[in-house]
Image (tube, rainbow, N blue to C red; front, side, top):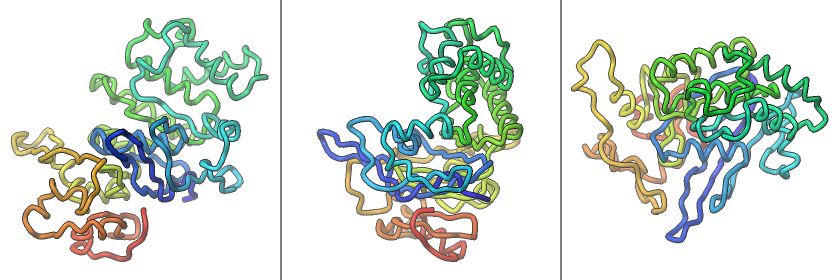
Length: 340
């Protein structure tokens, strides 16, 4: 598989009055062409911050303090997006890398008709494009998301939550991007609508070959759609690999905890347990593994929770790696390396 986006040692920090909060801590991974990647983790794990870093949209008081984000164009030319100025980056943002923002209700301007959202988006990147062409393209992408073209004349308040979400997906497709970042695309939607949106995205991926990146806290919702999965905790990637490998044999206690919390139709729901404790305060300095206060292996005295050892990822096999050195050793470590 050819790489499309390569994130290397990306660190994003927020400079607050009471200290420095590292929301994205030395994250490295690769997104391949025509794949579907899921980035999961509970609220505050750094998923949305990571997406902002890839798009170079980190807002003050946040700042990208180190790392690179490489994009491979059609000719496999490698471009470091973080070295580009605003005008240069706009050549890639939305044309090559689009996004579907969290909370569709807030992402659409309530005083603009849907067609005006499409027109403004296209003209911001292609000021000379005729309005008639934009409307024609908007009608085309609305059909991709199974919406009638008369939706273009509606205001956002006239649409349901699911329809707004589909409008945002169509808006992300208007300039034919190669990759779409979807930040919690099914949040606040009922279960039936969630599955409808996911089925829709899967169909778009198969028909158009668009690379999709899901950012979500709900591992059960996206499990049947994604090819690979990246698990985030406290600003770090803690496990990364093919979704089948990760589900069948998780190699980090946090991933195990997430999977053990998912209820199924054929078991006793009372046996499902939430991960104990709370996520850590990211302003503090960590002297032990970030997950150690919530980790059964550490609490049972089977691991010392070395912070130094958790600063690298351990390859469990050729396609999966983990930050837990204890489980990696048990599962036979092949090699080690920075990031993923």
